[in-house]
Length: 325
Image 1 (spheres, rainbow, N blue to C red):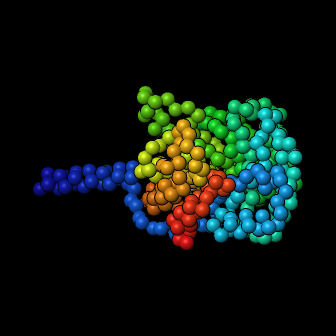
Image 2: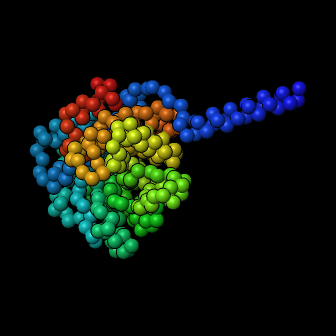
């Protein structure tokens, strides 16, 4: 009798362990449509022309109406790439105040952030004066120009990039209260995966939970760029996007997580637009949010890169899958 009880208990424990492993590795999935998860704060990157050139009221009206109608509440406005000394020439964004005033007259709910990018190798963030210039820009963009925040797209950054983290920390102390710091990062790779594959494949410039959490010390928004992956099957790309939703939303408790997907069409090494596109990206995001392992409360929205290549067919797909329209 004792043996029988122990045997049943043993199988029960084995079953519980199997269930636990399954839930940990794969999770349970529901089948909720995308619009259930849409919070109306989706993000998009818009081009430099809006602040570098004069835009008439009609053009700004059309832009803002399109943004609002498609549920974009966060807009990254390209103000110019950072120069090697950490500055941006003022004439690069000479119409920015005019643009923001017109846009906010039309709609006061959309938030605009100053998008500043650069190739990491072209800016020496170990130089204190360069970091100081970048933090000055953050102060100016939020205090004097009145952006709702600053958005960094410096690529690539990596786990050991302490100078980038220092830059964010210095910017944190100088941005206007109530404005946000947003950072775009490459896909999240779990540290355990790096360790397991180190004998067979060497990853470079990777972002594990180490860099994500380091960035999260100072950033309010984390934008994961899920493109240029080199995947050549639709299902594998959807799987990757799903796992990014699961992984990144689980890393944070009080951050806004955006998952970025591509709208550009130029085929190049490491990018196939027939695989990495709005439809597959959206389906991957929805699958991720439907998975029990994700933390939907940390998910802020979809991010589309870039707006100027977001064509009619892609908008139709996005609206159907995400807005139920």
